[in-house]
Image 1 (cartoon, one colour):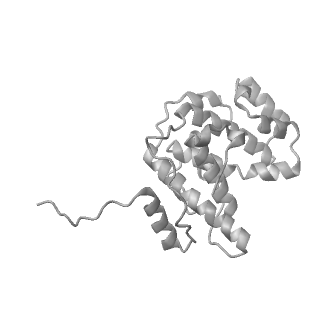
Image 2: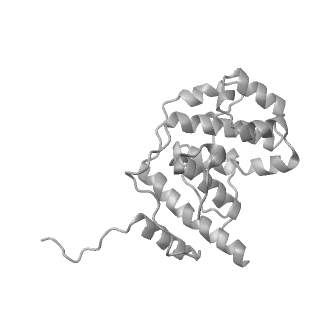
Image 3: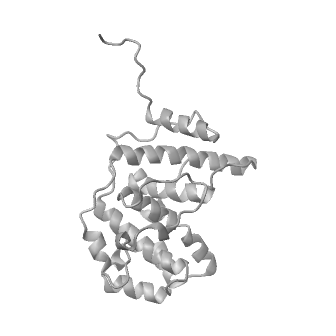
Length: 220
């Protein structure tokens, strides 16, 4: 017999709120729902693979593992320069210590995009910076002596739209909590830099406002 009192499944927003409450993170109950599944077009696997490859190369420069000249030569020799953004070109042409520090945080974008490609198993709780060394070298886009286009052209299977939107909704609300904590000078058990970079990558993944990588907005 049909149960008239069966509980309705929690909405995406309700699931995020329940998780944040459990973790003791402040919640803004008035934040709206993010875009629905029907309103969202996820980036293609190849777009994601291209973006994560460029980020991986600039990240090597950020951590002084290679020079900017080596990075430019690498990208041009593998016909990837066309996918480098204007901001990334500025960084590679003039990699100051300040810009290196800023770019080093993009490791969280790499982690998030590799999660979308099912190479990273899960987005851990955002209280510490990710460790890209945990990713097996054979699954990383820039392998020594290997053409990065092999990674880009691989038939990647990405996570479902539901999984990506669930993560996007959660990080949208995490990001609000980080902004609120900064404005009101109170402690929070998450790292705002980690949250922001993951939210940024997730917004790019869902084509938020149809913005290119350099222009992604993390509205809260």
